[in-house]
Length: 316
Ligand SMILES: Cc1cc2nc3c(=O)[nH]c(=O)nc-3n(C[C@H](O)[C@H](O)[C@H](O)COP(=O)(O)O)c2cc1C
Image (cartoon, rainbow, N blue to C red; front, side, top):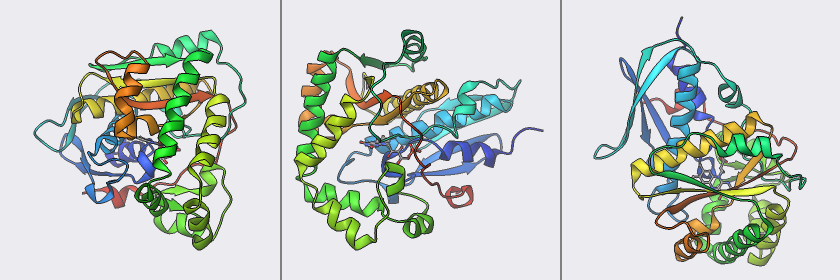
């Protein structure tokens, strides 16, 4: 029997998404699943144009498509244009299971310091050859000089973001400092998933609110330098369809890395800070392609998995 569509939606909800706000709603139609934005979960400070929100919906779309193909559906996607929705038409087909499907529940954003090992060239080749979407490109940065260029922009981004009270307040709003908070809400950034200790809210707020911009920059510099490399996902246009396709390519890349036991995490500071984005684009020689996501990758142990709301809570 074909997998229940709610089960496909459960796989979709395991996708990467900004601050783990899970900014999505799903509708089950007769022959389709629709993915809708949940703007009540937007991040107005770090993501004023809902760019990362739509990228997150693209990540969910990719998981849904991988799960659909693996469990016996063919899928046809209608991208958001005038309409504020991603539509996935499904029809019964021969199941095509594969390593990316198995990687869905294992993928995670691993924010720890990595062990510095280089990804062997055969595995790097596999990662570099993930299929792309129209208009989306990948730029891999693996030489020490390229990594130092990336680091300069991550530093600059951290210094700006952590000096911005509104950015820090929005982050604190989505931080879950202890198990009770995390289990009550089933969303947001739970401390343990970022290898931070549990704390009562008052203490967590004090520590994060008191983080000096330079401390944050130094911590992320150490993480970037411990990574094997970085990759920028870029796109030719900057509209909803391009953001969704960016999310698909990023999730596909993260699943491929997971299948090879390579860990990854995002460091989007140079793209989120509007004043840095164009400079970052030029410094990397991306031409007309706009940077959308910055990913570091390498090797590290698993961290506890981030939480998700149950499917019943995200159905329209
Ligand atoms: C568009 C987008 C932007 C993100 N930006 C960051 C970021 O700048 N820093 C970071 O540590 N994680 C970032 N993340 C990762 C999310 O926080 C993460 O996916 C979410 O907390 C769920 O955790 P998981 O990926 O382990 O399932 C981003 C994810 C997406 C899809």
